[in-house]
Image (cartoon, rainbow, N blue to C red; front, side, top):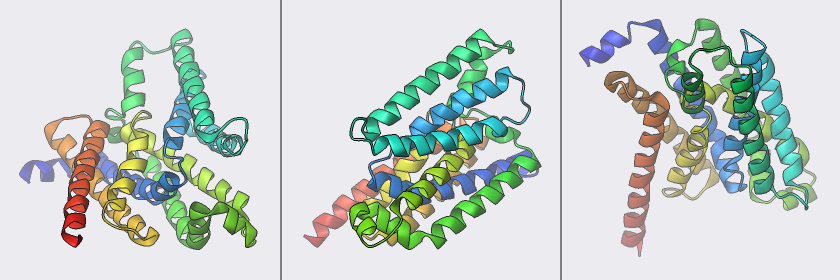
Length: 280
């Protein structure tokens, strides 16, 4: 506790904890919807797109890569949604195509136009998060706070419509719900979360923030509302504990958070199995 109190004196540690909690909360809210809609790996695809955009921003020397990364990632989310509804190119194929293409393009650009003496370190930091979460400044923290508030408010305001689109899109469309508009909202919010989460766990581990809490909650609860609330609680708890362990033990931030999510998933699976056996 003394060691933790010592580290908490530094602003960058407090910034990291705040951003980590906010990102994990936002990703868990959309995670349940994405898992149920069979779009679990959209986070993986969009994170690779963001990686490619970051490579382009780095090559042209932009100090604020959000100017390029955010619009490109949002546009890709919309394209994935549209392409995934195409009978010729299914959702999983579209995600794989854009994901692999963007990742290869980004790494190729970084190699050809490299301006860094430590290219391998830069790539590793981007892919796995490394210590980038501990280098946030106050401006980046406030941007994350504002965007997180927008995501949470949008989810609460459109909760009923998101629920309808998630479980039976055809029925929702038949009842007059503008499913295309709400799918677009889901895609844009997902893209925003992915860009924010890259500093936390890196582009290769983002899907874990989306998938693990949702699946863990589904092992314990059945209703959409209960699963969403439980997913948010588990996600925040895993992110906070993972970051604290990482700070104290010196382990990679992103990998430690994902490991915590995996352990909690195992516990939830065991709990769900035992509870099911008792009920029978």
